[in-house]
Image (cartoon, rainbow, N blue to C red; front, side):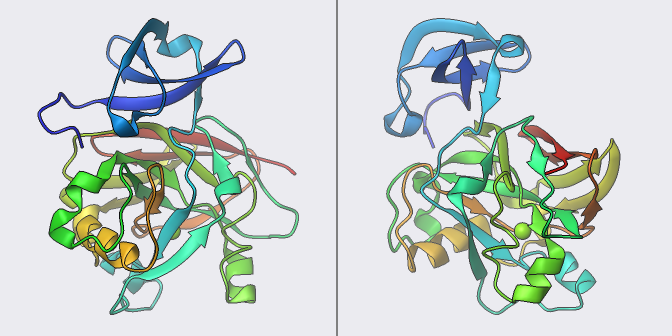
Length: 261
Ligand code: MG
């Protein structure tokens, strides 16, 4: 986080074949371009863009996406399970990265494609063996992620690499909010405008700080790495043509359409 600085909304965009980072004011619709990635501080590059005139990209390109299973008490109950004593980790393939507004491809290998609305943590500094209370300085900020899942393949395989790893299965965005208390945020998923998940991060078993501690004692986290912190109750299937919107309080919304292979 940028202690002493104003809260920022950091995004990546493409315009006329050029990719750049920027800081957006969603109220005015203005993007101020910044020079390079935001991890070593923000340097404004001078240019400005209109939010309505750019194509948003995933706000980071992570070296890995670490996801947490069964991290909401109320979601674990709905699955007939208990919150695990230690966070249950799996990896989503970085090649599954998708952008705000990008199509999610319904693979022909599955008959049951589910949305999972989640709060995503974006790492800002190299983090190894970080204690829970020392987690805030290694966090750049927060965004929304949809942990798209082929539910039937998850059950069939027992392992998650295929079920969670198809191309387009990791929409993330729309931007990184740098100043946010993650302890009590409403997390929702809407399908075609209708609320299907409506939870709150206060139901999380392992807090964000605890997750940074636990994960960074297993693997080094690098700037841009993403932690998908688990999903609240109400997960369910979508079909081709459905529009999924993940909303996290204090951040914004992430919308993606399901398309045929
Ligand atoms: Mg999930």
